Image (cartoon, rainbow, N blue to C red; front, side, top):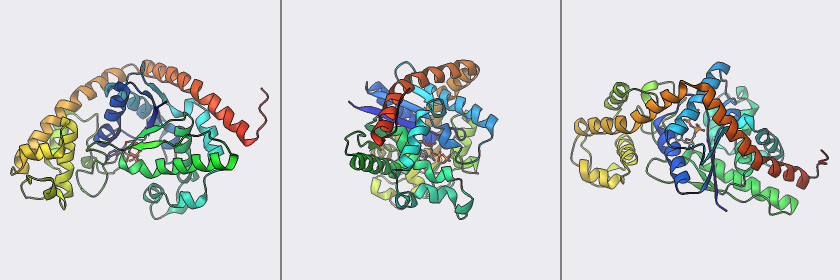
Length: 334
Ligand code: AQP
């Protein structure tokens, strides 16, 4: 039976990249009638330092962003990871299945640890094994993610296969990464070769879901671009990462293909295209930030939603982690 699992770290305010690469598609999967489980991965967030008060606020804000983007807690399971203990339990078991050689190939660790990897937390190194646990704990078959997470889903497949092979079982199904649409990798507004990221020190590099209309318009107006006009064919975007990024963002927001966008704006300059993009972005994002503001006014209600989601998640996860202990030979007697 198809089952979708995906997550987002509440490690800062969410960006347009998170919205187009993840949240918008999460709501679409739910609306296709597939069973959907969505998690605010707070255990992943603390692999780098998080101020405790900020983490609490960001977790609630991320929950509000999910709901405002169309994830309905009645139809999807929405919860924060640390409230379902089985995530950490299965992660430990999978730490003992994953191989150091596999972990050493993970590019996200290299990117996030930077030059001084000795100073990175052990948790940051083990991050992909925790992510494998998140997915396998629900026997999820589909994982909608942005392009940056593809390698981790592939590692999850390797961990599942090794577990099944080592214990001679067909227990964990191999999940498929779902990387769909024109916004699988939204780039920084300041540098078309870098991913738009909530942890980028430059606020001008990203659009936050909580930015007001003026801020959104200003950031798009100031986005780095070359001086040429937009081409009429996709091929013309090949060596123009900044132009390509803005066209892809427009396409994803408008539910068009990049070719359709160029059909409309090919031959026009950024003086025309940027204001049109800003208007479209404000039109699509303003209702989300308004709804987030409304939900954030009642944090107790958000906490209640996350608690109910955690109960539903636990009902699926607990038997699967128990079975994993049994398969591995641990005595279960209570
Ligand atoms: N720029 C992006 N374009 C498309 N998809 C993106 N995602 C993130 N950035 C982009 C997708 O959002 C989901 C949640 O990501 P995450 O918050 O768990 O971690 P991340 O990928 O590390 O995202 P950030 O924003 O870059 O966070 P920081 O700065 O904290 O590392 C994933 O599906 C991701 O692909």
